[in-house]
Length: 263
Ligand SMILES: Nc1ncnc2c1ncn2[C@@H]1O[C@H](COP(=O)(O)OP(=O)(O)O)[C@@H](O)[C@H]1O
Ligand SMILES: [Mg+2]
Image (tube, rainbow, N blue to C red; front, side, top):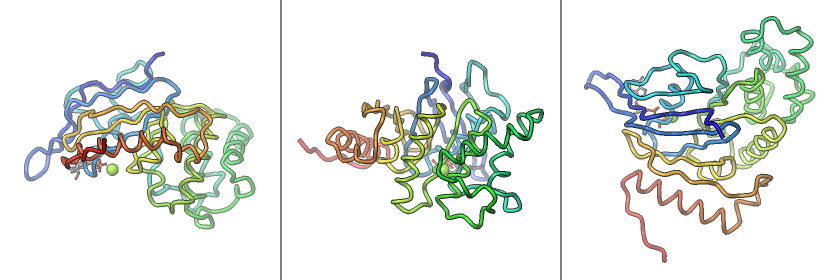
């Protein structure tokens, strides 16, 4: 399998008044085409910085970012992004918000085709009937569903999500996890998800990358060996419990805290 995303030895420091702040230190991450990569790590370790580098919004001081066999050196239109706060335009309807990337990336696509594509995605995430609503008329979870549709409407090479479910309550979040898996089953895409929720990383991920404390290195990679057609119940199985325990220990190590012996 070819790696769609290849991050090799990426090192970056921000220039601050107090001097350089090293944030990433020789980071390596590989994501095969069609895989879902969840990234966890201590707060402030450089996760959001990593998303900006993959999207080409920033250049690393050293190392390389490759996407689909091309070196990333400038902002990429073929990347879809979703954030904790869905950035939907209030003066546009939900349908028009979802269509927006197509207007930019595929200006020659006929209007009817754009509408069909957006409506099909909205239907897949359970937003059929809400196409003509404004963002403020929807709940937080529904807005996040709409923003996911917008992030993948133009079939980007990769969907990059920076803590997209962080502001939602627990039940809404679990619904969204399931929607995300259902969506991927119908509409395969490669994804990088930044999260601080270990259950989320295991439920959604094919692999979970644990970053060390700042400056971040790749500390640990967990291969998630849960069934492909998982439902939330899978999180209550012994296999999932073992993975969550493993990740929790790794986060403690990343934070420089002691890991107690359990066996
Ligand atoms: N533009 C910037 N200029 C200076 N420092 C920054 C900038 N962006 C982020 N930082 C700092 O870099 C570190 C990593 O930030 P970030 O990538 O947002 O971490 P995370 O997403 O893991 O919490 C933090 O200490 C943050 O304060
Ligand atoms: Mg962040």
